[in-house]
Length: 190
Image 1 (tube, rainbow, N blue to C red):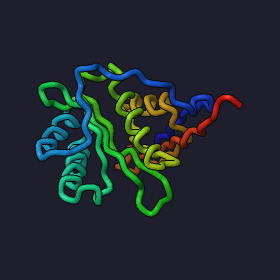
Image 2: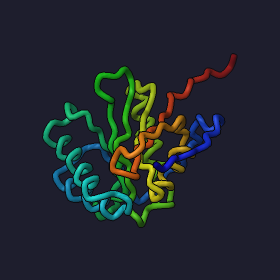
Image 3: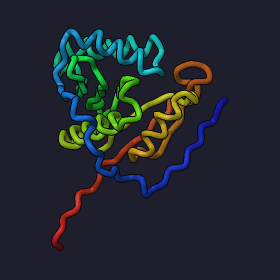
């Protein structure tokens, strides 16, 4: 069994302001039928996802198209001027919980990776979840070495307290769960 160790700096609980991604992008939350293929292409090209994971990402888009808000899935898409997706995130409230949300997916096209688009997407969807009343946001990712950049990204973004479920996805591929707790609001002028 592979054991994943991470040290979390408690000072990293807050998320610094993130500058916006390139101004060439258009942001939208409404899904279209064209997004079924757009998400398939984006997740396939992003580099880390298995065929099953790509199919699952498309299923969530399909659920949103069929059932709307009742699906529980919300999306934020960053689109280039040629209507090609540069990145997207899928998130929503966790059923049977109080003010707990899941970030189901976040993916960025290779041409936009390492250009802060992932940080911008994450910041925007976190703000949406906080605005909707979220008190905690959970993420899940793989323990495979190839997912190390994703895990480091979440740590840099203020996600803490990793829990590992060994061999969750398949033998040798565990699930890592992290949480971000709603920042306390402070008032000035005291």
